[in-house]
Every structure is written in structure tokens, then in C-alpha cells.
Image 1 (cartoon, rainbow, N blue to C red):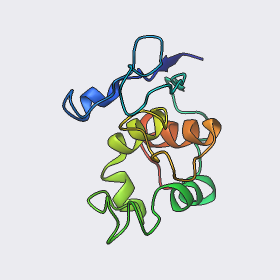
Image 2 (image 1 turned 90 degrees about the horizontal axis):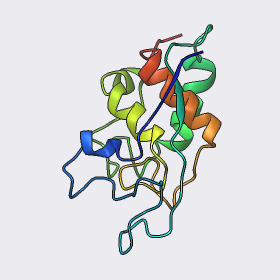
Image 3 (image 1 turned 60 degrees about the vertical axis):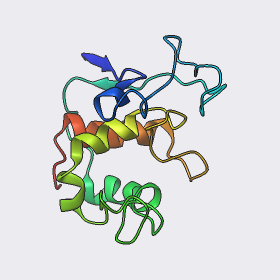
Image 4 (image 1 turned 30 degrees about the vertical axis):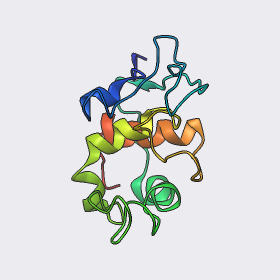
Length: 140
């Protein structure tokens, strides 16, 4: 199966360099950055959607509710309510940003969920990123 890696500094595509990732080429953070001492390997994302694709109803909605759409973050009134992930429509309308942010290491400046919040496992992050980015967020 063909696979591709999410680069550690993919955040540069999401934000300006000043707000983006400050990691070095070996995956560790630059000295003096907010991410000092953090190490992380990029996810290896499949090039094609698995068959069957991850199920929104059975798998994805549960993960989003637990790690993304809590009252403090990606929900109405949350700190990041501009990206409301409490509904399927909210996620699918912003699916590429969603996929990129969950694929980043949680220690990266733009990685989600932010440090200090409950974290999905690497397997769960891979499932979220694959469903949203590669599979194009099917409502299955």
C-alpha cells in the first residue's frame, strides 16, 4: 500500500511562519520555542482510503466528541468555535484543516488537541486524518 508522510512543519501551509511549526528536520523542537524538548514522528498516512473506510457513525464521531468538540474548544462558545466540530457538517466543511491538525504531533504549535488536553492515541489520530483527508470524510 502506498503511503505518504505528513511533514512536521505542515503548519506553514495553515499559518504564517511566525505562528507555525518551529521543529527541526529531526522532529525535535528548536531551542527556546514553546515546544522545547518535544519529539515526535510524523504520521504515515495511506495514499488511498482503506476498504471499508473508517465509519463516521461508529468511530469518528466518538473521537471528535471526546478530543475535539468539547465545550472549551471546537464547539459553540468554545475558544476555537470558528471551527465547530459538533456536527458532521461542521467537520466536513473544514475537513482538510481538521485532517492536517490531527495529523501533526500534539507537541507541534498547530497540532490538535493542544498539550494539556486529553490526547487521542497515534492510531486514533491516524484514523481521524485518514477519514477526513484521504477518504474525504464520508458520512457512513
